[in-house]
Image (cartoon, rainbow, N blue to C red):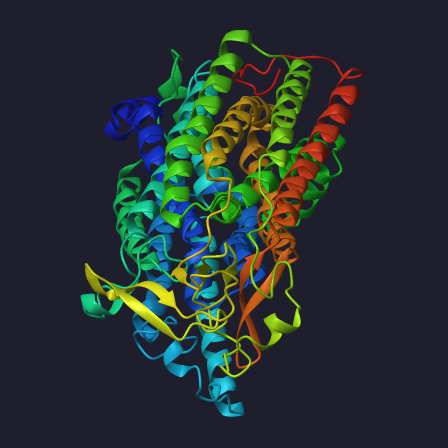
Length: 624
């Protein structure tokens, strides 16, 4: 030790404090989550732009978990043997490149086209007596191929993002835990997660701002999209704009990691520098004697050891259930609010970013303070978590009854099969894929002016690029026989804010258990296996929750669809849902996952009653 002490103490890099690393890592994770949440906030817009179903968009939003899952265990296994800050910086730069790749479909794809009577496209009175759009086999194949190519390009970018995000969590958390004081590590990690949660908040707020801008604002003149507003069902916002901002932020927050040392001085230790450098010297000696093949030989035994531990497995499975709930909320809460309460994408993103996500940050921070002040033991944590999570599940029950049935849509919901309804537009040759919703003066919604039998329209006096009213509508059972553009209003918009407050409060209560449950994993494995255990934990959470959950929620949402947009016979995105079915299946799936997680925690608490209780405070030798 004396031979190494002068060199280590005089090294200026060791004066870098863990607080600075916590700040930098918080900013990187904030930016990483800003990108992920922004992409999820614009997923319904991407659906509308490229004709994806909810299942396809849900799979696309979770594809970054594939690249992460494949590599995270191996990267975590070598966590104590590499320069962790440098690998984090490289991962951040790779994420920046992948975010930039995601914008390519906007620049490579033709401009967005929407059904309009002003532009002579389908579903308009201008084409009422013309034959339907020709759909040759070549045209249909070309259209489907283009959509598939867009999905594959965006999917490849998501996979690359997953590869870049591999070292962020295991290397960053283990680096903080290794060099923070025994009493400070839980609080630092709580602060880290609390700062990171503001990333999704900023992401949704960025989505709210970007989606107010027309998607092709850089390609077309203003006259092309003056007909639409952000509240129009045909509106597509500039989903690509926030991705450019996210890419720049990821690149900037990755640079500081290249200036952090491989090791730093541990807090609250008198012999910190000497001990740290002595351990580093021993580590360097072991690295020289050990080979990559030796490490790979040890890998299966450590993996099996962790997976065969009932305590570790039940703990991680409970986290997987709760992560599935978060994945469902993050991916499709926008769509739920839009279809249930007539919220626009701009409004839903704004509410999620300003109300829902900050409540999660407060809950995580308060949970870390409770962990530090109350000194929760290993046996007390499952009991505490079961109580708060059960309360949060009960708070979701009223949301099942805070909704409305679907608006009447002619020929869709309920199906109008009367003889008069069948012939009121029989001579109009309305194309199958026309989608330009209008609300008749009889209170019934129609898929397009053509389906309403309208033969004329009046332009808006203040905007000649916008239709004010459609007239002479033979299908409208009203004396006026008129229809106005847009969806018919439902009776639930006043429930939007109460529902958001209820969901946010339930999330705040549930997030109190985040830090205590997480610290159980860090304190129940040997110090040398810490990075590896975190890697296994995140691998299982990705494989069992973050990867399949968005697709499962997307399938549940698609199963409630009653009318699909079609083009040349091919099914595109959903146009209308059965609101009651959508609400029950979406919320029911969340409640089912949460109930399964609570069951795992109950089993964990029962098993711990036979286990020797010990404190979660960290010592020099590891867990007590």
